[in-house]
Image 1 (cartoon, helix red, strand yellow):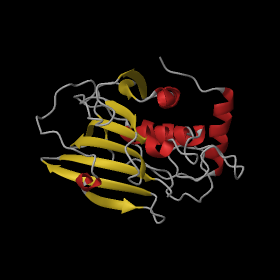
Image 2: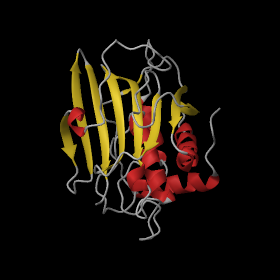
Image 3: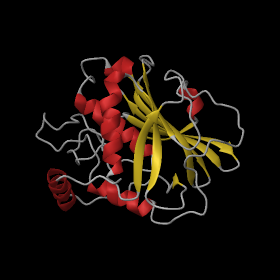
Image 4: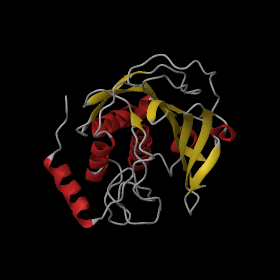
Length: 260
């Protein structure tokens, strides 16, 4: 069932949309194949109790979109390994170590279609005073799941004015330090972009599938396995990697680097 926008959210989205000229923020047109809209994407819950409310909020936020719903379901993987499951997104949290990254979204594609994805939240950093806040938890959870449904960033400069969307980088997620908009949730342009991405229907589906092409499992815990870095923000705080598997199959990895 679709959720409805509250009057406050409608006003906030309208104000943001009226004052900012947005650019397209699809990443390569990649999307989940499906034969009808709205479709339901399962989000596997492999997070600790500290993250459960944020996962529920993110699921509800993205379900506002007219073309899709998300459903939080029981996880299917060890959070430490966070192995992908075909046809869904596994969301994981664990103490992955002080390895530099705060959050990672990994998306498998075949041709132009997303086939599976994972989101990893690094509690080694989220247990520190800097990142153990509702603002940072909402921002990173919302953004990484947003990548797995086909969205890129609206802006990639942390110091810019907040755009009022989790698909925007910021040093002030909840907008209180500098009297900015909150970047903890999607905004109207995110929903409009999803309508564009999922405007056409497919003849097949990659949703709910449980079989893959039989490729061996790839250990992506080491950044060296992410492939080549396609881009990095000027401040070094975000990156996108691509690993080409051949035969039209690729793995994309979006990274938010922690501020050391």
